[in-house]
Image (cartoon, rainbow, N blue to C red; front, side, top):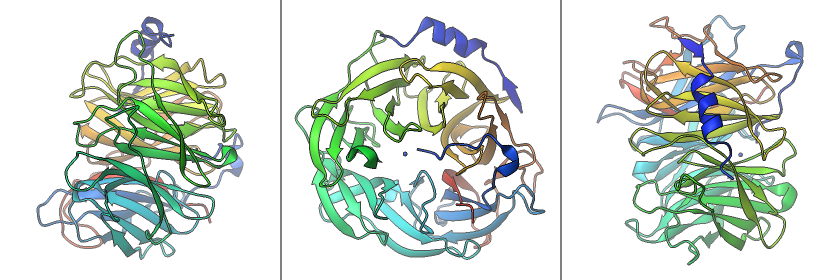
Length: 415
């Protein structure tokens, strides 16, 4: 089911050379690596009568039940299960989001085989459609809310929430520097007393081109920075995700139009962005760069393109000069979208938007020295026997609720 084929992307790197939330670093000693016991997968019901739910999968490769769905909990809403937190927090709760319903949930995972929904929230005050959740050092959660009020007319805000989802403080993100801001993602950078948020409209109406830098301790806006466009003309559109590198300070930003920017001077009053790499992109119907992740000096990027879709690894020892290491593809059409690293390990969980892997949860092994990747073929479905855990099934631990579409997925913390 896998092929390593660098030729297409190498051509892309030659043709488009740079154009002018961090994972724990991997251990190089595989003997000392500890595996996460579980995978938590946030999934959207396909049946009209179904509910979005969190599934718990046995992720211990030494377990006889490796790859089996061992627990699940529905939230009572069918709303297009979307993002979870990007990594499992240390406090045994997980924020998840049903974006289309404008609802979010906090799930208690202190007993992984008996997950519980402990709270939920939708609009908070005038802020509507929560999207991204990132943990702060104090255990609270920094969240983006796309909009204010009903409809999609007014930019939303950054909200700090307590571990139960209650409001601590909020700030508006609207700024005349970019009239089409819609709060999409946010990344805290505690080492610099900063947070960086991006703008991308989940309703695909506004077309933001900026990122915003905030003082983390009081959520005061330092600057809205409009990205410079590159030679292709599309690079700056729809800023998506920001990730920290291994020093917890160096920061890079992706756009849904497949550009990679290095952010500079975040600890100053004049932050800026340097365009360092661009992948081919043509339109939103067939092409997109999804969730990235960092792994020591390796940058992983999900990449969907009409000419071929891949999970790509780059060496970012020099963040201004990413170097292609490897790319992983599927034998059939696919659209890799979500990835998250195993804390302290070398495995990656991957889910997709469309194509042959649309209802699969896949695991990928990443070599921390070379960046070479391979699918974990031992992680297979208990019913079909095929690689990856299949969510196109009738039965779950919580009932006969039918097929589901997995989206956000994270490994449990090692215990």
